[in-house]
Image (tube, rainbow, N blue to C red; front, side, top):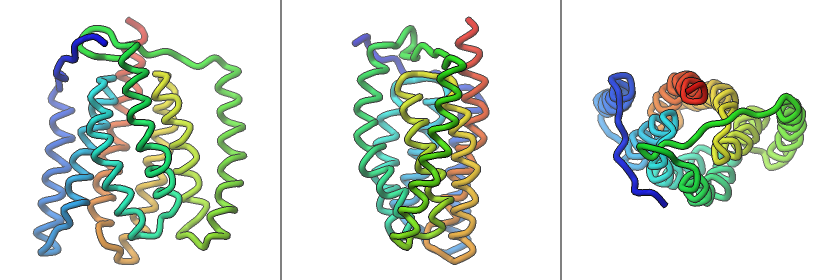
Length: 224
């Protein structure tokens, strides 16, 4: 593998990282206490998505930290789809993703992006809808919290991660939808006064902003 270089962050990237830190501080001042797991997960998660939007391979290191802690937080909130997704899939995929990107990185440790074909896009749409309804039914049987919303974010996350590992630009379409629904899910949890919900709303809101940036940044890299 080529030698890793440190990521070069722009003002927008630093603004997102600073925003999650300030929001975690505000949450501490507001509640008078803080959860270490949630705070570390939020900061590591934002750094992870900032680096992934730039196509930098070190995103997998921070992803490993965020995912490990997010499993614990989701379990406490009874988002069982999130627990299974992150613990059984995202966690090992950090190692797989790092391996694949290490074989496909160019200068500055940035991965080389590519596009899906039209047929692959159609198959992605059909498989997404089918799997969401199937997994939602399973989560409903398990009496999970908001099962079909949970299923939507879970299924799309599985597919988005596969696209990310293979460096397809279209992953960002899915991440945008995932982030929107996950913000809604944690807002519901916040309304139900679940612990750590406020920090998770902040984290996923920043993820959403970053996903738009990631899409345009990867498209720009592809056009070069």
